[in-house]
Length: 96
Image (cartoon, rainbow, N blue to C red; front, side, top):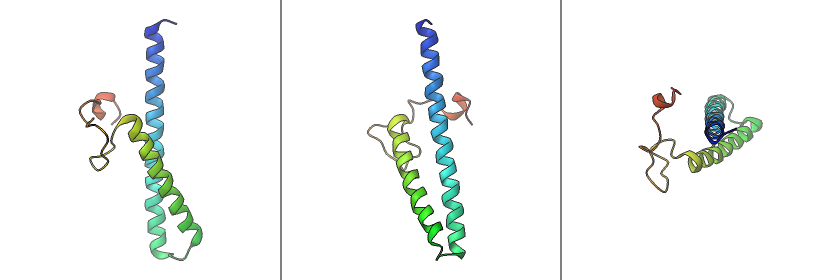
């Protein structure tokens, strides 16, 4: 395998990891919203409260990890440097 092939493999792996992390972020967001709606009507459900806390912590940790690796998810999550214009836009990656 030559360098160009290896670089392409590494780039594909990086894209796969990034997309996997984004999928996990979307899944946790969905679960947190649904649990919140459920807890609106069942505020004493300790299992749901525990899951909500667990998912919220996991989401916070995952977002922190993602942003350290790939840059801010939104303008509300500042990083050490402004990276908005360094990354391809979603339509440039084909991930929209």
